[in-house]
Image (cartoon, rainbow, N blue to C red; front, side):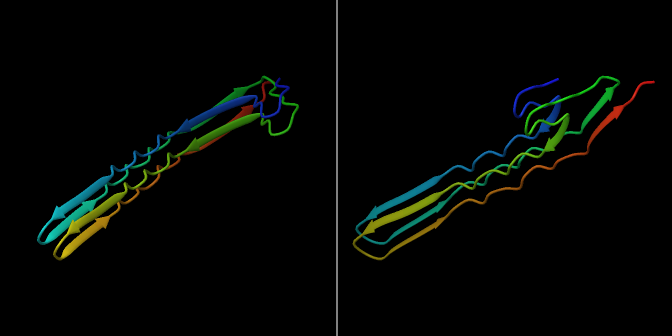
Amino acid sequence: MTTGVNSHGIAAQSIGGGGGSGGFSISGTVSTGVAMGLSMGGEGGLGGNAGNVSVHSTGATVQTTQDRSYGILAQSIGGSGGDGGFSVAAGVSAGPSLGLSMGGKGNTAGRRRHRAARQQQTP
């Protein structure tokens, strides 16, 4: 038996890891003639998949008494996708100057898997 708020009787979770952040990039040029700079941020990593979660409770009473307190909580939560990296390009030139900067792309989140909770009564 649990008696506190947010106190679950049984909690089973599988949570995938978050994707990594893409690296940043900075490009700078200084020239008395023509200057050109290119900068591209890195791509974020994939979020991790969550695994299967199952709970099998036999005979015992699972009881909670407060708000937001589940008797059995089974969760499978995929991890978030990674953030794209930022990018900066700058140039100083007495002549023509061209700067191109492209931020990196984020990536997809992980997937959740099957989850099951079952309580079996014993005779």
